[in-house]
Length: 277
Figure 1: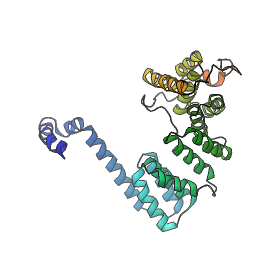
Figure 2: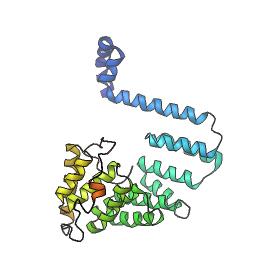
Figure 3: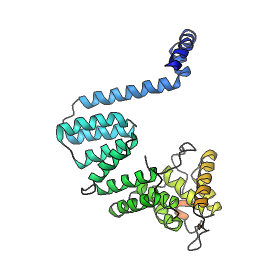
Figure 4: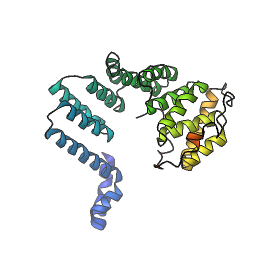
């Protein structure tokens, strides 16, 4: 409350001198909150209009989650399940929403309910991401491997597995899933960053630079990748330069010689992948 009261005078001045645009410039957080509220209201209106099948409602929930409306999506999952009952897909969306909403225990319970369903891969992946979030990388590797066995061509899952392996000190094991992830999705930002991190950890700095140059990774993000690699190397002193098939440009011409990514926007420097959101 004190901040709101102190900001009252500034608000009046902004309105008097610059109109509504001044308010947006002076209070970017408030503007963002208004935009998010508008997005949630729009999603709610869509949810109430002509939703006549479970599949249509699930598509709406998925769209809300893609837009980051995790809390709102939980309300609509409740409504969906009240109307059509609980399904593996609604349970998966609930588990994802709870994880992003900072409810790890409830999220874990929902992911576990998926293990005996056709969406077991999603359940194991979610459990792996939760383990990684609490810093238990060996457990994350175990769960992500279970998911990978059930869904071997999911590039984001492979990237998560490679990253968790790096953080668990399993440097050699990280190479294969990270290479697979980048070749399956060469334009994926997480796959690019995680493979570059592996190359830095294994002291293949020229190859890491070649990869980051090819993908036009910004300088700030490169610093973040190098710092993360340094921390991994310190926590895993056994990591040595690769000797069993060193990643030279000729060896990995597909990822390292790829044309520049169609998307050159990288995540903020402090948000190097720890697993897919």
